[in-house]
Length: 355
Ligand code: GTP
Ligand code: MG
Ligand code: MG
Image 1 (spheres, rainbow, N blue to C red):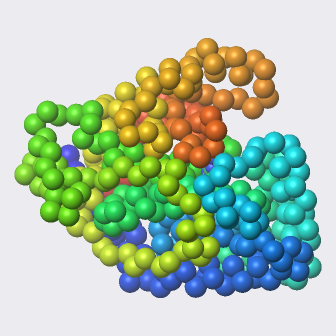
Image 2 (image 1 turned 30 degrees about the horizontal axis):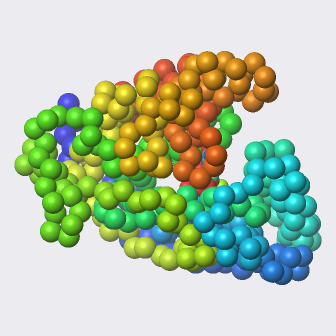
């Protein structure tokens, strides 16, 4: 069996380029000014916010895209407001994005600019020479959910490595993607944060809970101290208090053994401790919640799938913190659910496929 230290070392070796590399958010700033320049010529009162991985991790990954959203002053002032999903709201988003896409095309003729109108969230996808970006409009949820994940992952900065490791593994094994995939990076990040919040809950009675010096609870496993996360009320996240461009957060190398232990325990949690059949992975509630309480049941699944074109599954249930009644795991069919468990077993046995 692989030792936690060997697993942690394999992960750090794989991501060696992240340590000591220039991960500054300069690329994000550069892309931001280019998009803002186009936005100013079509809708100068809109403010451009960055979200997604650059915000969550606090650095720019060399190969990752950047997510932008153009917000109206009223969206920012009402920074805790919910996003409308009406056809009217979507129509307005599509209109502003069409103007923006035209301006981006005109100013940067060599870039590939694609408008995706029919998706749940209308988006403009841009491929520029050194960076790809997605632009949406009038929607606060991405800014809020990224800030929520960032707040969680910075409570114990070493935990950022678990998120980096799981996301990169999910891409390597082909589980990450919006359409053919099982979950997006966002979905995997929620799995990571939920695990960190609840890992002591469904488990061994011999774990002692202690109050850490700084107030954060710590738990002792095999005599080692691991800092626990503090629950954050997701409703407190307010766009008017979130910076439009993320602040850079230097990435320190973690203790390899702790990282290896976390990876093993992440898989153990989802493979055997978390009651996947009956419960929902959710950052919205402090206490565990059931599928039944959200009416995310087999009956609801059958009813939806008889009446709608887009199939929705309630096997892997991940409650979106800000969208209404949205399962982030909705694409995970029973078949994919079984395959996903197999990937988890293999990921555990092979140090995320690295050993
Ligand atoms: P990479 O782009 O893969 O490097 O990581 P990322 O952290 O940017 O994640 P991702 O592109 O998956 O998500 C960026 C943002 O898109 C998230 O903050 C969400 O707002 C949104 N998003 C992505 N996937 C989903 C999803 O399945 N459901 C919902 N509601 N939003 C999603
Ligand atoms: Mg992204
Ligand atoms: Mg994106």
